[in-house]
Amino acid sequence: MDHLLQYYAALGIKAGASLPEVKLAYRRLVKAWHPDLFPDDPWRQMQGERRMQEINTAYQHLMGEFPALPASRPAGGLGDDAYVIGINEIDKQHEIFLKMFEKFRDTYASPSIIIVDKDVKMKIYLYILNMRRYVFKHFMTEEEYMIKYGYPKYFEHREKHDEFLKKLMGLEDDYYTDNQLSPNNISDIISSWIAGHIKMMDQEFGRYVNDIAMV
Ligand SMILES: [Fe+2]
Ligand SMILES: [Fe+2]
Image (cartoon, rainbow, N blue to C red; front, top):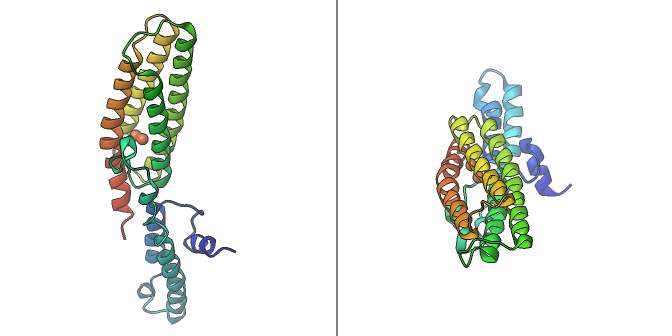
């Protein structure tokens, strides 16, 4: 078996687990196995020492896997570190969404005019629909992490997700009828939401997870 896989197995987590997941698993195992927990039981103390050796080795090697991650992120534009919240799976999804949005903005948002061409309108409608579907998938992932880590602001955060989904659905409907905003206006709405939500609320959640996963 690959050494890395062994290390993940030693911590009882799936391969490719995020940094907070590795830290949380390590902290839980130390609490369960530290030899000082068994002062009156020499046999369990020995087992604890052995287990701690496995756990520490795995943890040190897995931690060595993480420092390289920020360097792989694209520099500049919307993909800068202000959007990195420190949970790998979520950061990857944010990056994909930011790229989708950038492509929309670069393709349709300039000049700032109302689109009348039916084919272009349909393309924009489908683009917004696909973004909304991706955003929904992303929100489900983010909310799953919030439940898993017992995030106290889960309901408040989920409400903001719902607001944005409703907003995107409204933009879709508008595009399907003849009531639509210009692509430039749509771009402004999405980019201010990205700046306000990912940079503020998602960052706050990332700090919470990384804090509780600290050893
Ligand atoms: Fe997010
Ligand atoms: Fe969020």
